[in-house]
Every structure is written in structure tokens, then in C-alpha cells.
Figure 1: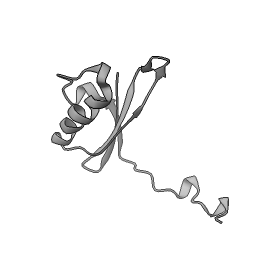
Figure 2: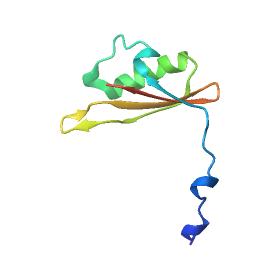
Figure 3: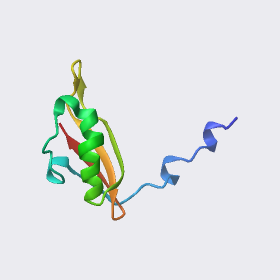
Length: 89
């Protein structure tokens, strides 16, 4: 069993220095996107549009939420050696 001290320490981990943050609305169109069906929309509308714009390694995750569901969503994607973090909602 590995010991906790055998794991890489924070200062030894390889973090990407090329990181940008932005609003997903500024990058792709949300035309035909239905917020009530956000999961299908991410898969079938937003992800293809991001790929078409040259992004790869695209991941969506929960941002803020309440008892009714997501209030905002976060998208992480890579383009030209830079990691981009976007928010929408």
C-alpha cells in the first residue's frame, strides 16, 4: 500500500501555466440550446461547436446549483496549448 508521503506534493505536480478564463457565450453560439435540456444540449450542441472552433479535451461540470438544479455550468477545454475555463448559465 502506498504511503501518503509517496504521492507527489503540490509543488512537484505539473500544472499548466497557460490558463484562460472566460464566458462561454463569448466563444460559441447558444442558438437552438434549450436550458431545460442542458445535458443533451452540452453533448449535441455545445460540444460540437467547441470542437468546430478548435477546442479539444472538452469537459462540462456543475457550477453553482440549488434545489431545482444547476444555476451555472463550467466547461474546461484545450486549444493551442492553453487550458480554457468557461462558465455559462
